[in-house]
Length: 297
Image (cartoon, rainbow, N blue to C red; front, side, top):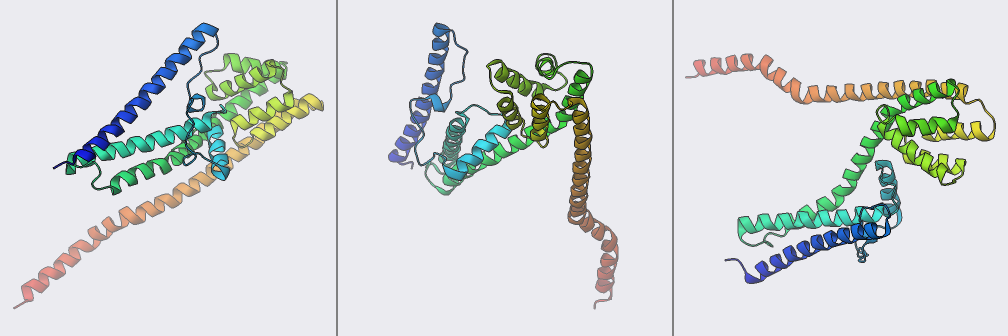
Protein backbone atom coordinates (compact mmCIF):
# COMPACT_ATOMS: atom_id res chain seq x y z
CA UNK A 1 0.00 0.00 0.00
CA UNK A 2 1.45 3.34 -1.04
CA UNK A 3 1.68 5.89 1.76
CA UNK A 4 -0.33 9.10 1.17
CA UNK A 5 2.59 11.13 2.53
CA UNK A 6 4.97 9.59 -0.01
CA UNK A 7 2.55 10.31 -2.85
CA UNK A 8 2.14 13.88 -1.63
CA UNK A 9 5.89 14.49 -1.43
CA UNK A 10 6.37 12.98 -4.86
CA UNK A 11 3.64 15.22 -6.28
CA UNK A 12 5.26 18.28 -4.70
CA UNK A 13 8.58 17.34 -6.31
CA UNK A 14 6.96 17.09 -9.73
CA UNK A 15 5.16 20.41 -9.18
CA UNK A 16 8.41 22.11 -8.17
CA UNK A 17 10.17 20.86 -11.30
CA UNK A 18 7.27 21.99 -13.49
CA UNK A 19 7.30 25.43 -11.84
CA UNK A 20 11.06 25.77 -12.50
CA UNK A 21 10.60 24.88 -16.18
CA UNK A 22 7.72 27.33 -16.49
CA UNK A 23 9.81 30.07 -14.87
CA UNK A 24 12.66 29.56 -17.33
CA UNK A 25 10.20 29.76 -20.25
CA UNK A 26 8.76 33.01 -18.90
CA UNK A 27 12.25 34.47 -18.54
CA UNK A 28 13.06 33.53 -22.13
CA UNK A 29 9.87 35.21 -23.31
CA UNK A 30 10.77 38.31 -21.28
CA UNK A 31 14.25 38.38 -22.86
CA UNK A 32 12.79 38.20 -26.38
CA UNK A 33 10.34 40.98 -25.53
CA UNK A 34 13.18 43.12 -24.16
CA UNK A 35 15.13 42.56 -27.38
CA UNK A 36 12.18 43.58 -29.55
CA UNK A 37 11.63 46.75 -27.51
CA UNK A 38 15.24 47.92 -27.21
CA UNK A 39 16.67 46.43 -30.40
CA UNK A 40 19.61 44.67 -28.78
CA UNK A 41 20.97 41.32 -29.84
CA UNK A 42 19.14 38.32 -28.48
CA UNK A 43 21.07 36.77 -25.65
CA UNK A 44 20.56 33.31 -24.32
CA UNK A 45 18.96 33.36 -20.88
CA UNK A 46 21.33 31.90 -18.35
CA UNK A 47 20.97 31.23 -14.64
CA UNK A 48 23.45 34.02 -13.97
CA UNK A 49 20.82 36.46 -15.27
CA UNK A 50 18.02 34.99 -13.15
CA UNK A 51 16.78 36.84 -10.09
CA UNK A 52 17.40 33.71 -7.99
CA UNK A 53 20.99 32.80 -7.23
CA UNK A 54 22.23 29.29 -6.64
CA UNK A 55 22.36 28.31 -2.95
CA UNK A 56 25.78 28.50 -1.34
CA UNK A 57 25.69 24.75 -0.74
CA UNK A 58 25.96 24.13 -4.51
CA UNK A 59 28.01 27.20 -5.47
CA UNK A 60 31.57 26.54 -6.62
CA UNK A 61 34.39 28.28 -4.80
CA UNK A 62 38.16 28.23 -4.62
CA UNK A 63 40.14 25.74 -6.67
CA UNK A 64 37.02 24.00 -7.95
CA UNK A 65 35.73 27.24 -9.45
CA UNK A 66 39.08 27.98 -11.11
CA UNK A 67 39.24 24.45 -12.52
CA UNK A 68 35.71 24.61 -13.91
CA UNK A 69 36.31 28.07 -15.42
CA UNK A 70 39.44 26.77 -17.15
CA UNK A 71 37.56 23.73 -18.47
CA UNK A 72 34.74 25.93 -19.72
CA UNK A 73 37.15 28.13 -21.64
CA UNK A 74 38.80 25.07 -23.16
CA UNK A 75 35.35 23.74 -24.07
CA UNK A 76 34.56 26.98 -25.95
CA UNK A 77 32.34 28.79 -23.42
CA UNK A 78 33.79 32.27 -22.98
CA UNK A 79 30.80 34.07 -21.50
CA UNK A 80 31.41 35.34 -17.93
CA UNK A 81 28.17 33.73 -16.79
CA UNK A 82 29.18 30.29 -18.10
CA UNK A 83 30.29 29.17 -14.65
CA UNK A 84 26.86 29.94 -13.20
CA UNK A 85 25.11 28.27 -16.12
CA UNK A 86 27.17 25.13 -15.57
CA UNK A 87 26.41 25.12 -11.83
CA UNK A 88 22.67 25.42 -12.48
CA UNK A 89 22.73 22.73 -15.16
CA UNK A 90 24.63 20.36 -12.89
CA UNK A 91 22.18 20.81 -10.02
CA UNK A 92 19.22 20.47 -12.40
CA UNK A 93 20.64 17.27 -13.93
CA UNK A 94 21.15 15.79 -10.46
CA UNK A 95 17.57 16.67 -9.52
CA UNK A 96 16.21 15.12 -12.71
CA UNK A 97 18.26 11.94 -12.10
CA UNK A 98 16.88 11.72 -8.56
CA UNK A 99 13.34 12.24 -9.86
CA UNK A 100 13.76 9.50 -12.47
CA UNK A 101 15.04 7.16 -9.78
CA UNK A 102 12.04 8.00 -7.62
CA UNK A 103 9.69 7.23 -10.50
CA UNK A 104 11.43 3.87 -10.98
CA UNK A 105 11.12 3.10 -7.27
CA UNK A 106 7.43 4.04 -7.37
CA UNK A 107 6.85 1.72 -10.30
CA UNK A 108 8.74 -1.20 -8.72
CA UNK A 109 8.04 -0.99 -4.98
CA UNK A 110 5.03 1.32 -4.88
CA UNK A 111 6.93 3.86 -2.76
CA UNK A 112 9.15 6.54 -4.40
CA UNK A 113 11.34 6.75 -1.27
CA UNK A 114 11.95 3.04 -0.84
CA UNK A 115 14.80 2.30 -1.22
CA UNK A 116 16.60 5.66 -0.89
CA UNK A 117 20.06 4.46 -1.93
CA UNK A 118 19.43 4.43 -5.72
CA UNK A 119 17.98 7.94 -5.56
CA UNK A 120 20.94 9.41 -3.68
CA UNK A 121 23.42 7.40 -5.76
CA UNK A 122 21.97 8.53 -9.11
CA UNK A 123 21.84 12.17 -8.01
CA UNK A 124 25.39 12.09 -6.63
CA UNK A 125 26.87 10.34 -9.66
CA UNK A 126 25.15 12.79 -12.00
CA UNK A 127 26.42 15.75 -9.97
CA UNK A 128 29.99 14.42 -10.01
CA UNK A 129 29.83 13.17 -13.61
CA UNK A 130 28.99 16.65 -14.91
CA UNK A 131 32.62 17.70 -14.43
CA UNK A 132 33.84 14.64 -16.31
CA UNK A 133 31.41 15.41 -19.14
CA UNK A 134 32.80 18.96 -19.28
CA UNK A 135 36.33 17.56 -19.32
CA UNK A 136 35.46 15.28 -22.25
CA UNK A 137 33.91 18.23 -24.11
CA UNK A 138 37.07 20.30 -23.55
CA UNK A 139 39.31 17.43 -24.70
CA UNK A 140 37.21 16.93 -27.84
CA UNK A 141 37.38 20.61 -28.73
CA UNK A 142 41.14 20.62 -28.14
CA UNK A 143 41.56 17.69 -30.54
CA UNK A 144 39.51 19.46 -33.21
CA UNK A 145 41.44 22.72 -32.88
CA UNK A 146 44.77 20.89 -32.91
CA UNK A 147 43.76 19.06 -36.09
CA UNK A 148 42.80 22.36 -37.78
CA UNK A 149 45.91 24.23 -36.62
CA UNK A 150 48.20 23.15 -39.54
CA UNK A 151 45.60 24.30 -42.09
CA UNK A 152 45.36 27.67 -40.32
CA UNK A 153 49.13 28.08 -40.41
CA UNK A 154 49.30 27.14 -44.09
CA UNK A 155 46.56 29.64 -44.96
CA UNK A 156 48.31 32.42 -43.06
CA UNK A 157 51.63 31.58 -44.64
CA UNK A 158 50.19 31.68 -48.18
CA UNK A 159 48.43 34.99 -47.54
CA UNK A 160 51.49 36.61 -45.97
CA UNK A 161 53.78 35.41 -48.79
CA UNK A 162 51.38 36.95 -51.31
CA UNK A 163 51.86 40.38 -49.71
CA UNK A 164 48.79 40.58 -47.48
CA UNK A 165 49.27 42.31 -44.14
CA UNK A 166 48.69 40.50 -40.86
CA UNK A 167 45.50 42.44 -40.10
CA UNK A 168 44.07 41.71 -43.57
CA UNK A 169 45.05 38.06 -43.13
CA UNK A 170 42.98 37.83 -39.94
CA UNK A 171 39.99 39.48 -41.58
CA UNK A 172 40.16 37.24 -44.65
CA UNK A 173 40.26 34.07 -42.51
CA UNK A 174 37.38 35.25 -40.35
CA UNK A 175 35.28 36.19 -43.39
CA UNK A 176 36.06 33.55 -46.01
CA UNK A 177 37.60 30.43 -44.42
CA UNK A 178 34.62 28.95 -42.60
CA UNK A 179 34.92 25.74 -44.65
CA UNK A 180 38.65 25.03 -44.33
CA UNK A 181 39.03 26.01 -40.65
CA UNK A 182 35.52 26.51 -39.23
CA UNK A 183 36.49 26.49 -35.55
CA UNK A 184 39.58 28.67 -35.94
CA UNK A 185 37.69 31.04 -38.24
CA UNK A 186 35.23 31.70 -35.41
CA UNK A 187 38.07 32.39 -32.97
CA UNK A 188 39.87 34.64 -35.46
CA UNK A 189 36.56 36.45 -35.98
CA UNK A 190 36.43 37.13 -32.23
CA UNK A 191 40.00 38.47 -32.47
CA UNK A 192 38.94 40.82 -35.29
CA UNK A 193 35.98 41.99 -33.19
CA UNK A 194 38.35 42.80 -30.31
CA UNK A 195 40.57 44.81 -32.64
CA UNK A 196 37.58 46.66 -34.12
CA UNK A 197 36.51 47.69 -30.62
CA UNK A 198 39.88 49.41 -30.20
CA UNK A 199 41.54 46.80 -28.05
CA UNK A 200 45.32 46.76 -27.92
CA UNK A 201 46.98 44.23 -30.22
CA UNK A 202 48.96 42.68 -27.39
CA UNK A 203 45.89 42.12 -25.24
CA UNK A 204 43.88 40.92 -28.23
CA UNK A 205 46.55 38.34 -29.11
CA UNK A 206 46.63 37.14 -25.51
CA UNK A 207 42.85 36.74 -25.49
CA UNK A 208 42.98 34.86 -28.80
CA UNK A 209 45.64 32.47 -27.48
CA UNK A 210 43.57 31.87 -24.34
CA UNK A 211 40.49 31.09 -26.42
CA UNK A 212 42.38 28.65 -28.64
CA UNK A 213 44.02 26.94 -25.69
CA UNK A 214 46.08 24.40 -27.66
CA UNK A 215 49.80 23.77 -27.67
CA UNK A 216 51.48 26.38 -29.83
CA UNK A 217 48.89 29.16 -29.61
CA UNK A 218 50.83 31.16 -27.01
CA UNK A 219 54.03 30.89 -29.03
CA UNK A 220 52.21 31.98 -32.20
CA UNK A 221 50.74 35.00 -30.40
CA UNK A 222 54.27 35.92 -29.27
CA UNK A 223 55.45 35.72 -32.92
CA UNK A 224 52.63 38.08 -33.95
CA UNK A 225 53.54 40.58 -31.24
CA UNK A 226 57.24 40.52 -32.14
CA UNK A 227 56.39 41.07 -35.79
CA UNK A 228 54.17 44.09 -35.04
CA UNK A 229 56.16 45.78 -32.27
CA UNK A 230 59.77 44.79 -33.00
CA UNK A 231 59.77 44.63 -36.80
CA UNK A 232 60.64 40.94 -37.02
CA UNK A 233 59.99 39.32 -40.40
CA UNK A 234 56.88 37.27 -39.96
CA UNK A 235 57.08 34.89 -42.95
CA UNK A 236 60.41 33.19 -42.04
CA UNK A 237 59.38 33.00 -38.36
CA UNK A 238 56.00 31.56 -39.29
CA UNK A 239 57.60 29.03 -41.66
CA UNK A 240 59.93 27.92 -38.87
CA UNK A 241 56.98 27.70 -36.53
CA UNK A 242 55.12 25.52 -39.04
CA UNK A 243 58.12 23.20 -39.23
CA UNK A 244 58.40 22.99 -35.44
CA UNK A 245 54.68 22.36 -35.08
CA UNK A 246 54.87 19.58 -37.66
CA UNK A 247 57.64 17.94 -35.64
CA UNK A 248 55.49 18.18 -32.53
CA UNK A 249 52.61 16.52 -34.36
CA UNK A 250 54.86 13.67 -35.45
CA UNK A 251 56.12 13.24 -31.88
CA UNK A 252 52.57 13.19 -30.50
CA UNK A 253 51.55 10.70 -33.21
CA UNK A 254 54.41 8.41 -32.19
CA UNK A 255 53.36 8.65 -28.55
CA UNK A 256 49.80 7.80 -29.51
CA UNK A 257 50.99 4.81 -31.53
CA UNK A 258 52.99 3.58 -28.54
CA UNK A 259 49.97 3.92 -26.28
CA UNK A 260 47.80 2.05 -28.78
CA UNK A 261 50.38 -0.76 -28.93
CA UNK A 262 50.28 -1.16 -25.16
CA UNK A 263 46.48 -1.22 -25.20
CA UNK A 264 46.44 -3.84 -27.95
CA UNK A 265 48.80 -6.05 -25.95
CA UNK A 266 46.54 -5.79 -22.91
CA UNK A 267 43.45 -6.54 -25.00
CA UNK A 268 45.15 -9.58 -26.53
CA UNK A 269 46.14 -10.87 -23.09
CA UNK A 270 42.64 -10.37 -21.73
CA UNK A 271 40.52 -11.58 -24.66
CA UNK A 272 42.66 -13.50 -27.15
CA UNK A 273 44.98 -15.60 -24.95
CA UNK A 274 42.21 -17.32 -22.91
CA UNK A 275 40.44 -18.35 -26.11
CA UNK A 276 43.76 -19.58 -27.57
CA UNK A 277 44.47 -21.64 -24.45
CA UNK A 278 41.00 -23.18 -24.63
CA UNK A 279 41.45 -24.11 -28.30
CA UNK A 280 44.95 -25.56 -27.81
CA UNK A 281 44.54 -27.23 -24.43
CA UNK A 282 40.89 -28.22 -24.74
CA UNK A 283 41.28 -31.40 -26.85
CA UNK A 284 44.15 -32.90 -24.78
CA UNK A 285 42.34 -32.21 -21.52
CA UNK A 286 39.13 -33.74 -22.91
CA UNK A 287 41.09 -36.82 -24.09
CA UNK A 288 42.65 -37.21 -20.65
CA UNK A 289 39.25 -37.10 -18.96
CA UNK A 290 37.83 -39.60 -21.46
CA UNK A 291 40.74 -41.98 -20.76
CA UNK A 292 40.26 -41.65 -17.01
CA UNK A 293 36.55 -42.37 -17.33
CA UNK A 294 37.15 -45.41 -19.58
CA UNK A 295 39.75 -46.93 -17.24
CA UNK A 296 37.73 -46.31 -14.11
CA UNK A 297 36.15 -49.49 -12.59
